[in-house]
Picture 1: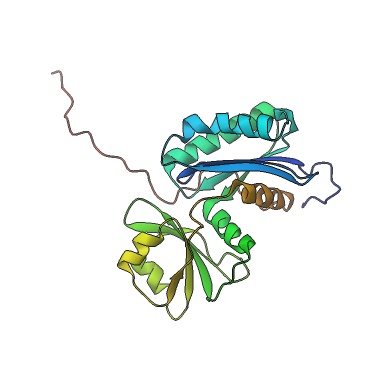
Picture 2: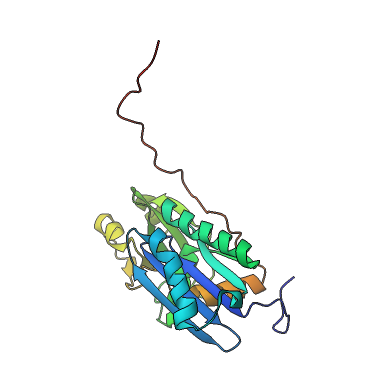
Length: 241
């Protein structure tokens, strides 16, 4: 059952953070006063060391609050980097248990799309596509209609499949994999909008609360679309006969 605005279970202090992409972002939103504090620091690695100190800094130094002011924890569940997802999810679960508060999961592609639609930029296209790096030959992709509704599931697809699924349409591309896609697929049907390559934790806080209250958030479980890269050891182990 969705929660009404007057419901005492509706969270008023929301902590949101993301480490799934190439950044570490944290926000705290006092929804009762509509006061938001947040920051996003780009980093390829190092989120494990940066996340907890950043949470502490946002809650105590910036917001002037204590941890018991948190009613809801929001984190991204994927798709994204395996290590980054584990960092964010393990931290969210641990804090959720320690503070006895719920944890809501959000799709990374949805949060990139939400930032675009919240920006108020026009969309002269049939659909929006969020392209995210897999660090392989394919891309994480999800399509959206012009009103922001997801059009299908998020998937890991080769560029040729994305082109094929866009036949006859004009597609606006956002995300952190634009340059790699454009390098191999120079097509007039695709236009790009830069500046939406990282997740804004402030958007996460608002969207997380909205989805939680509507009971439509994701479980705090990793959304893996592929297996992890595992390489066999080059050296053969010694055998004792």
